[in-house]
Length: 608
Ligand code: GLC
Ligand code: CA
Image (cartoon, rainbow, N blue to C red; front, side):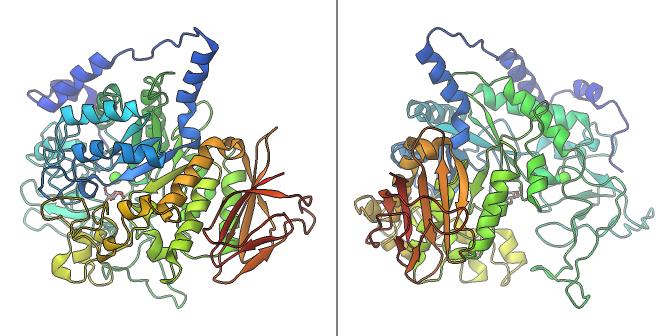
């Protein structure tokens, strides 16, 4: 087993000649004592500082897949300077922060999620100097930069793993998860230690001939899992985090966080069965396992408490203010999600992703209502982080669209995302309605899971296509050959066209974000579900003390629907409404007892 029996901290000191370790140590020393005293010189200043501390509570966080956002040097791959070039666009949209998926040096097996050096920038994206300039230019526009932090695994090309696999007594051996095989002998490698599987298909164990042991990889073979039972690993990441915090980042999105630990018993995982008692087979042809020994194991909360304490050392009342910790938290239920916030004494994430709401994957009013009620009532006073998609899942069109009313349905989703209480993640291109465009032929697939799982699993290329800036053949993304093809839909779905169209989806996102930031009930008001029996229209009210109530109604059907919010026990008093936003060309509404919605129509009004 890979639980570290040795004094790993001492070992770390003993490792000679590791450039990355020394740089980290130096960075951590420079970063020491970052907690700046907050001086209360004037009320205006304290109000400003309070805003900087609370910025994440009603935030719009825009996820950028840097490879696909904007290329500036013609190599067909987006870069940091490209992001910097588009900051005014992001400002106009109204975002508070951008989260960059990994831009660290990487062999790109998993396009950045296999990191070979955590304290540099991959040359294809730019340099550390470009990064610093991006942070500074973003700051001028009040936009924070959030980094992705991948702690479960490194690349197999990371110096730590190169060392670790070089011999059984290398000081880095216990930084990864090494095991003997089942029935292994001096001449026979035996079988993998247990039935655990990679999330990307097949056994999670890889035989390493040089040192004659198996290593564990929850993701690709080239992404060996770190051994989080080893305190040296924990220390190394605190230093990495400090390195970026010191550079002024606004926080981190912690990747695959529930997979940090595995059950030390190494017991097999259970196989999921269908209703006839037969194993469910996944897209890779393997039996589906229950994840009971490799996901959400004890230890994750302690690690996150420590990372939070580290980030809080850098939190000041000045920009970027609170250094926010976002979690990639696909939790099984709201109770488990709540735990990810930690406790008042030992906080963990500020914003663990709420995938309960965003991943329902069908337009079911009752289901949405219940999940939104859960987010409102089961997370104490924590801030929910809503999202509908990201670089790992098909975009909104593919999961909620009907092929006929896609833009209207995208308006519905945007409204749930941005008119509900809490913070929101917007995936690049969703604001213009980019469509999931998977490769048509296996030979065009870039994401390896699309090759392993073809054709059931076509991989994630379809949601990572180049940002559609204009209608030209390369969509304004590059002058070279884009690393993934520009979807044909770029002809009509693009920023240039939508910016001048007041009825576009882009105009809708911009208007919603403006409301989120300027209407007091939207800024902080509670969410209260209305008309609770309605199975066609989802309606809710936002209410903050001493300010007008705002109602939001979204039609989940392709028919005209009329709602009367005065009905029933919890009905509201009949009042007039002032329209704040409604679907372009949608019917008129004037009063709470007669809100008229076209197919997939949306109405937002202030109660008079
Ligand atoms: C996360 C990332 C995904 C990546 C995986 C392994 O789920 O979002 O893109 O492949 O972790 O790092
Ligand atoms: Ca792990």
